[in-house]
Length: 273
Image: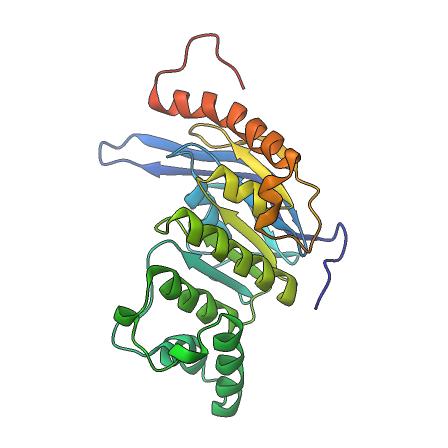
C-alpha cells in the first residue's frame, strides 16, 4: 500500500475559468475563477448546486476541455489533452454490451498495446479486487447496476492511474448499494495510493468518503468552503453513526442550501452562505 506524501501538491489550478459561447453569441460564464491545490494521495470531494460547473471542472482536469483562462498542472506539468496517469469514471454505464466483463476490463490495455501477459495479470487482479471473478465471462446485461459500475471502475484500475476522477459514479444506484460501493472505492484508494477527486450530489457520500470536501457556489462555480473531515484512512460506512458525521453533513447543507436556492432563482435578497 502506498501512503500519501503529506502536503505534496499533485494537482494545482490557478485562476481557472471556463466560459461557453451560446447560440445567441452571448457568453455563459460557467466556472471560476478557481484556485485549488489537491494533495498527493488525498481523497477530495466536490459538492455544489446543479449547473455550478462541477462536471466542467472534472473535464478540465481530465484534459477533455481547456480553461478559458488560468493554468492547470498535474504533477507539475500543464494539462494539454488527456494526461498519462489520469483515469475517469462517469455516472453513465460505460461498459461495452458486446464484451464480457474480462474483455471490458482489458479493453484499454489492449488498445494501448500492452503485452498480453501483462494484460492478463492486471485484468485478473482488478477483477478479483472488485469482486467480479465469478462473473468474468458474463456480459453487462447479465449484471446489476452496481456490478456494471464495478466493471467500469476495474477498467480504470487496470490502467494504474495516479489521479482518479469520479463524476457521480454511484448516482444511479440505491442508497444501500451506494454505501457498499463507497466502501469498495475507499479500499481501492487505500490499495493504490492514488489521488481521488469525487463529484457528487450526495452530501452523505461526500462526508463519508472524503478527506476534504470543497463546496462550490452557484454558477459561475467557485469554491466557497473547504471542510476537513479528519477521518482515519482505514474508514468505512460505519462512520455515518459518528456524531461528527452529522455535523459535517449539516455544515455542507448550510452552505449548499443557499447556493442551490440561488441557482433556482429563489434565494431571498439577504441570503448568504
